[in-house]
Length: 374
Image 1 (tube, rainbow, N blue to C red):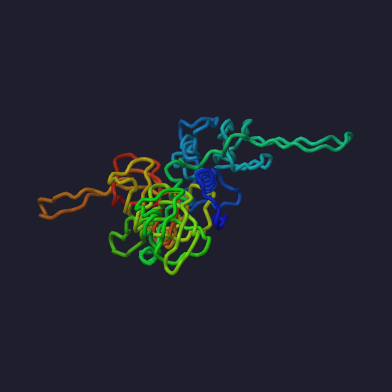
Image 2: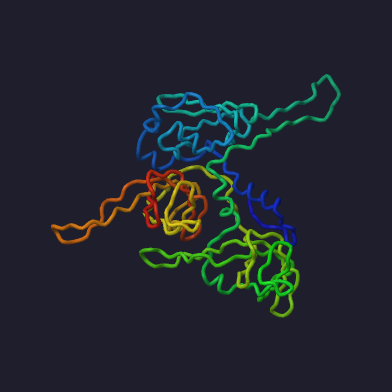
């Protein structure tokens, strides 16, 4: 799936909502040809991770997520795809709807989850019989929306709008001079003037310089946050002054905000909870929301990305960094061992870093806590 807005298209609130929903259509079960995750292969039978208090049958309700349901059956919810049995008689078995019933059974000593459709997830087909004249066919599809893999409200804008770029990209990008009638603050429906060359009738994102991310150990620059402000369209160019019409804004545009061509990229529309395929030893380097403490459903930035083998859907454990303690006998300061404190799932990756959603916390977390394989 490629996200490429039509040049000149009005990008109003309703259309942005549709795109966001499309981008975050996170589904919750595995296709039959998915490989078993390396973590399970190393750890033996998955039966050891089945919860002792699991239900034999669970009926999905509105508001459920795949992660929540997995946690009812498994101590390690990211192993869900390995015990999922696809029923070939069910259309779109990888989608789970409110009213569906999920049943746990054992086959040859191994746990298996199977799906029984409720009314919301069924698709009915009716065709005329052979002894009557032809008439239009009727196809009824579910009114309910399939449940997502994780909570979506915390990550919608990060999937489609925010992005991380090299600092030089922002430094060299066209920037906002002012709005029409000498306004210094601009909103949706306004025109604004840009210093720099714009492509005629092209769609542009207005962004603001965000945090500069650096590796805490090597000081390597990992990228700079380009915080999304709004979306506009180039409507004119004279010398090095461009004119834009703002279709939509998330907040008011300010003088000095940068302008980037609307990102064209392949949006990850599906993912499956999984363990990383490589050894991960990283850090949380930032948390969104203007806070320093990290809690459940917070979005964090980690210093591991695509070049490190991180993929969308990877689940990682979070370890609370051990405190510094004074050894009075040896007369030196030592760091106490780290302790496991939570879980996060990666939902967007860049070359050198990734965004993750904190799914579970056992104690307060903070920037510089460790991330490892689950």
